[in-house]
Amino acid sequence: MNVDANNVGLLVRLMSAATERGKVIANNVANESTPGYKRQVLSFEEQLRTALDSGQRDLAQVQPQLVEDTLTPAGKNGNNVNLELELNAGRQNRLLYDTYASILQSHFEMLRTSIESGR
Image 1 (cartoon, one colour):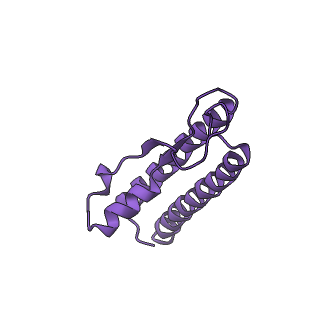
Image 2 (cartoon, rainbow, N blue to C red):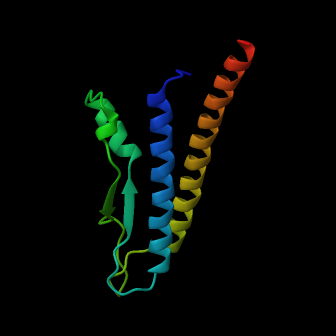
């Protein structure tokens, strides 16, 4: 693993995006029966992937985007929140957050080990 501040900053931003996504998912669940409510999705990893694929080097410019889900079909009341979809999104988001946190923890453990072995 490359040990530099950019990786740490990116991991922190990924964790922040996952935290915000959790809030969006909770908001969707809270509005499950609100007539006309449209499900929202927070996109960040996709934004990063697009930036990397296009050769963009300054990933600090990439920001999470909150978008309305236009693909999930709406029910009779115009609401397109599907509780099962939200629960699955919540589980996936939690796994992403835990993965980012584990990578960050490993990063700091490697730094600590390097510092302690240099004494």
